[in-house]
Amino acid sequence: MKTKVAIDRPIITLKLATSLDARIATVTGQSQWITGPEARAEVHRMRASHDAVLTGIGTVLADDPELTARLEPPAARQPWRVVLDSAARLPLDSKLVQTTQKAGLIWCTQSSLAVQSPAKKRGVHHHQVRGQVDGASGLDLAAVLQLLREHYQIKTLMVESGPILATAFLRTGLVDHIAWFRAPLLLGGDGRPVFESLNIEVLSQALVLTQTQQQQFGRDVLDCFDLSPS
Image 1 (tube, rainbow, N blue to C red):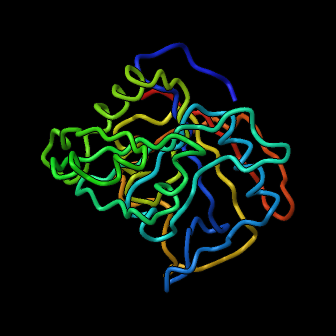
Image 2: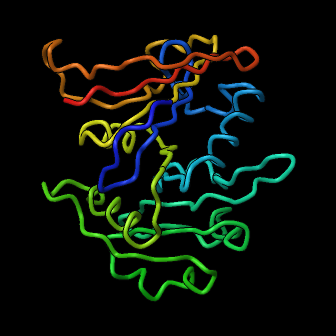
């Protein structure tokens, strides 16, 4: 992918994995696995090429991901794992907490209750971050990115999340690249969509993508895009 000029936040790649009709799960929420093993192996290589991987607490509670780069031979370094968790719900028995000796874990919350959390004794790096400036639920993404850049020197960040966080990054103009894995499946209109509302009322408001690459991984296709600046 083409790298943009240096900016005061990490360069962000939004990774998506969907059916052909842009669904991330069935009507009942089943999602493992939409993509095949070849595509999932490529995701591990992508993680290893980024300084950090970010997700939301919803994904943690639903899927219990580890978010490490599991490669053979092993990756030279593991990316930081970042969890956005405004209400401090991160389970102590989650894979993320249980693997802090393998890869660093950055836990961002809005709640001050997490300051004394036992998770910190497990090697979790906790930071209290302000909520969104518009008063909506969730954390201020710009503040999170500033923290990651200034405290951890994170320059490249891959977002692996559900539709709420993916949409929030898009709506705030914080996505530089999209890596979109699509499986040759159709889940229908009652399947769970990859994005929530972008509040686009006319075509001139649509986000414009420039395709930079297409690759086949087993049965699945990876399309890579740059987002045009608005």
